[in-house]
Length: 326
Image (cartoon, rainbow, N blue to C red; front, top):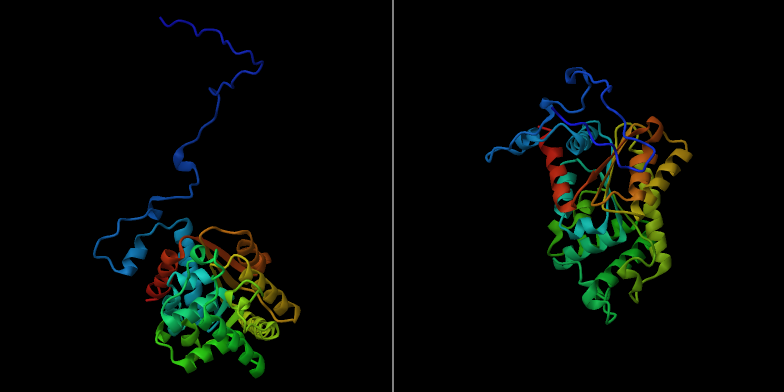
């Protein structure tokens, strides 16, 4: 015989609810978001890339990755624009050759860069090395003082202003004329040789080239403003099936892209039914708002956010674009 439960010693007036009367239902009758068919499968050690992607779960980011890759493939098939906006970290962590390959295959039709991505690409082309140790050089004031980088980029700004072209084209042209030893790894060179547009969007004071003695604000402004207007023309071609990829730019390119979107629409051009994708370590406010949400709001398209290390996520995405197209 069991003894009665001791009286509660709580001083609270409220008592825990009695759950004995709670209604339940059969598990089989409940709608569920995950089924056995959606689960991942182990990847055999001798699997091809296509077989590897087939082992991923049909859930969450894996499905978003597939959707982003599918959007790029369909854009190429429909001859719509695919613009890749690249922050500086993307280039300095070694991903320029990945985007060069996508461009060569026709999967990327234009690039938008901030100033640092152009600088890193310039240094890779010229010297085969980039990304100085800021902590080691800032104390002495030596940070940002590379002669060739400052002189070369500022000369490109001056040439762009004189010739009525943008900074991206001017840097690509300058490097191509120099025949640098690492031209094969330079996005700017390879895009220039293929006549693929590259725009460079500079915020004055953010780049090491702006502290160089050869810097000229008028030249910088003219060159980068030309590229903003060129980007507006490129964004116009996203309508009805295009894709915009923001890769590793948390502020500059999301802001520039949003202004290009409103400019195109303000001028009366249609801009709907396109896809935006943001790749980043952490999903920041501006990329999520200015790339993933606002431009495609109201049924204008679809926004996708993918989170991860660029040096892992971008090669995975590029592989999906190519392999899943077979």
